[in-house]
Image: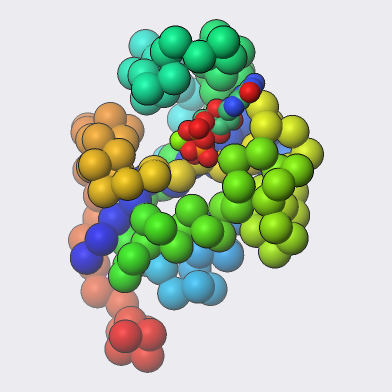
Length: 148
Ligand code: GTP
Ligand code: MG
């Protein structure tokens, strides 16, 4: 089953949005297979956001994502990578539709509440980076018979 890496960013943790965000993905029908509250070291932040190394906001981005705990998660389900991105909304909350996480809870691009993998290759890379040691938890849920 397809998996993706999602992360409530430090602003979302401080604003008590972990439960709201987990609830949205649960209600959609996706299954949580990994989760941890953690501080990100700058080495991990720089590797995670490596594709943005040359961008002018890279330093700001690394400072922000290491500024407080994040809630790192792995979710699984049919088409979860693309569907989670739709549920998150546009990168800049000012462009994100109401009903999406960034549309409902964010105002600025620097503090946009949630991260999600943008492709199968990113998902594999990011799950490897964040859940290398702990791994994910494979288990069956009977309710899946009412979803699929
Ligand atoms: P992520 O799921 O966090 O990767 O967001 P995204 O895939 O929707 O956007 P992208 O990968 O292009 O950018 C990564 C993150 O950089 C965004 O989520 C923003 O938080 C941040 N970012 C993007 N553009 C800017 C900017 O102009 N200024 C600042 N401060 N941050 C930015
Ligand atoms: Mg991205």
